[in-house]
Image (cartoon, rainbow, N blue to C red; front, side):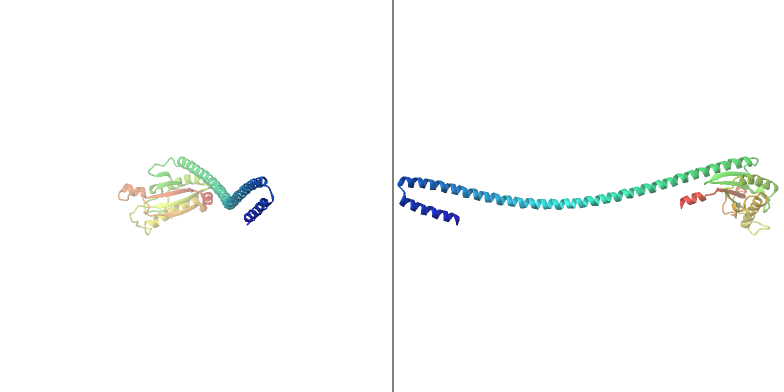
Length: 278
């Protein structure tokens, strides 16, 4: 519409000029008008170009705004993930610290347990040495001392202690028990179990069977240790195993002789160890 208006004004001006001005002036006016028209067209073209550039800039700005919003959203998500990761990392660090503390406590318990085991082992080794010295006069076919599974086994053959089929301890047996009792009374932390063993030959006489004989023999030894030699009764247990735990096959006379025995089993007190293992 603006262009049409300008063009109309231009025509009116031309008509007026033709009627009012000389030919030379008219020609000059035409030239100026032509220049003005070119300038107008250039201006309109520049205006159109500027509008297109403006529209392009607006479109770019909108795109940039969208990108900015997307980046803000992404940054927000990254911030959330970072916060979550930091929280997880803090939780993991705390868990690791707790595990390290538990491991440290367990290691301390293990060290203490190992120290106690070493102490108990030293006690048992010293006890074995002392008993060996106390009972050195007895032959190997009468008495043996062995260490097994942290326990000390003093094995006395029946010929050192009893007559055949009897539960009465003889004089030599009492002397051997007296020498052993001295060591036991000097080691108050040692628990004592007395186990009677027989061969598999059925018993005849005062006892119903081999089990009763083995139990009676163990009880007789316990009474001598506690009644004659003052070993604390609460430390001692009597048990009969009959022929159910042989040391050798019962098919030979030699094997049966090894099986007819009384074992005095010495065990260190393990209260502290049991408390650590709870």
